[in-house]
Length: 396
Image (cartoon, rainbow, N blue to C red; front, side, top):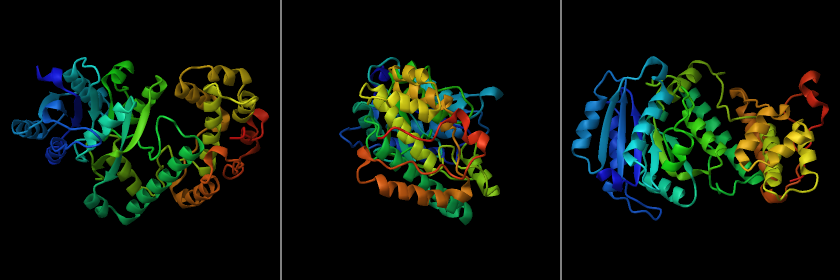
């Protein structure tokens, strides 16, 4: 059977995407190899999950399949209201694509969007990252140039500010707390437009988390919590749509439209103030050291003081074998790490602060002794004094 020879399967959820699906499939069919991989058309398959469509999405997919060198399977589905959202559609697509792979050792399961266009070496870049030891790969995305140029100028400028600030935080995280399994250059994006993981990893986490939105971040969180490795690969590139009218509730189009209508709409939840990020990364660095067994005397006690948590709770977390599971538990429990999100008008100011921090630590991140900057404007006494501890962190 053809399925037994498959090296990879790509899941493409598609809802009323008749106008853009062909471009997506053409890009997948043009995979040329690279990164040490030669891609044969018979080595992978594409599964189009045409869900709740009212247009010719399924017909477009079948017409393309008839002349494609790559196997394209088409599955039509009518998801019930409680599952007819972005997360439900991608779960259906990925489960169906995984079934094509059966239980082939070393097989890879990938997903992209029906309105996106993967780069010619996208599949090869993902496979190379998995072969290098990653259990899951988060790819990099870029907006379609023509659609980006058509956005209202204020919205386009805001998106550019967010992307620039996110890049600064990614660099800060790497300099302060480098992940040995996710080397630089890397990024911090988790997008359904470019996800890849081993079939074994997908089975181990029980499939895509059943959430209506944010299923991409939930998947990578689940992989990490299971003790597996995530690579944020800049070579796995996808061009995505930045249209203001989308198909899946809660998707990127909804976010862009909300920001267009309201300049004060929230920024991405991972964009915290630069001082908060510095503090978080320094604490995480010391915890990584303690959890790895290479801690310094007093690390656990100082972390307990810094995180405003009982010493035994920190010590117990440091004994856990899975770093990310233990760290996320500490983050969730620590009042000192309560996450704040940068308001859109403050992005430029926070970017300046982040650049100052990077200038101070960039020359020697491993031995940085920079004191944590003040965490934004003073808090009310009741909030600032929670736990009765000063804001200090063990030396890096």
